Length: 480
Image (cartoon, rainbow, N blue to C red):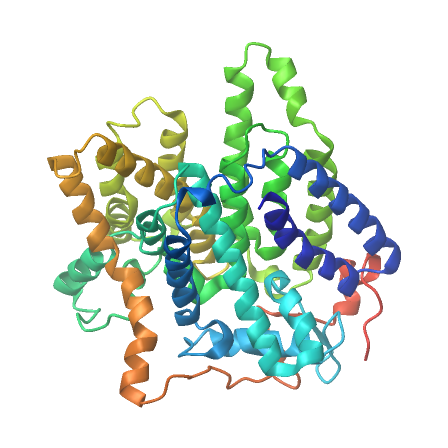
């Protein structure tokens, strides 16, 4: 499974290298990434089939069926209702299939610049099999990533459990409580609005695992997999490699994962007797060369995006009225504070847990541009870490037969209330299928970015890409 996970992450990056970079740079990038991936795989201990053999095949197939249903309901493949963001994502996917790489729009002199890595394997297949074949490939690719994530979750806990996978799928903050509070105080969020519970705090949002998959799968699946790979490492030789390979899938999830990897590195240095030796163990080839390469290439690529010029870092709290400070504190309490209070006794003295709470407190304070993307996406790896702490505590309570204790009941109540948010995402396509008497409801009104007003698509495009440093230094010729 180790080689499968690393290959899953590396293949889209290699496709980007050969589709977007000039030949010499693509060849160099391939050699560096392939060698770094090989070294990273060697630093993992492959347990083979020992974990899988804990359970019967019917049990394993049951877990797989749950994950398959989850991915289907997320909109992958277009089998069911797709939420409104799919209008934009389907246009990106179609253009990756129908246009030469790099994707260039001659009618508007613009190029596609976005977090496109997740689509590339399926888009490559779609070039030969068409739209339907490409969608099936995208569904299969996303499903594979989710199944690998579930495998490494099980590997971390050293047990294969459907309940742990369901905990991951349904893990979320207390958005329903926040929605009720907002309704009672300002009546601005209707109690019947079950579609977007997570926007109750306006400025702030920590997306549930299901929300991440249903809305921003391209920034979610590989960061999930990379995080759980990181937590399954037996040494620190590939910490920064694992973090860096998430950059092509989104800079904000990378930021969250890098902050965790950096803390693990510092903790490693200061807990070893020979700190100099510990520091040297971090200076591996895979921790240095591939991260530098990926950082340079994708920093230039993302910087060519036209929206980046208006995306300065902002400290939210400076822009807020006092009432928004109250909302921030309430947000922190409901999204992770209540759960952290329940876990604090068990993890008192665990510096990683303390650092996790610090991250979750700080991330919402900052924003880039006019949106909340930094808060929503940089929090993806920290929320995965909170899930691990919660799952570990639940397993300990179960082993001690204390699930019905006051602490166990309180934890179950919090988790059940939190599950309302992901359940609202999961139920939505089912509800729309019943209401509209139609199962497949793809969101594909935009079609393509070709010929569209580029100023309205600045988040996805580079205007006059020939002027960007990425094009001038690294990119192969755009095809007019």
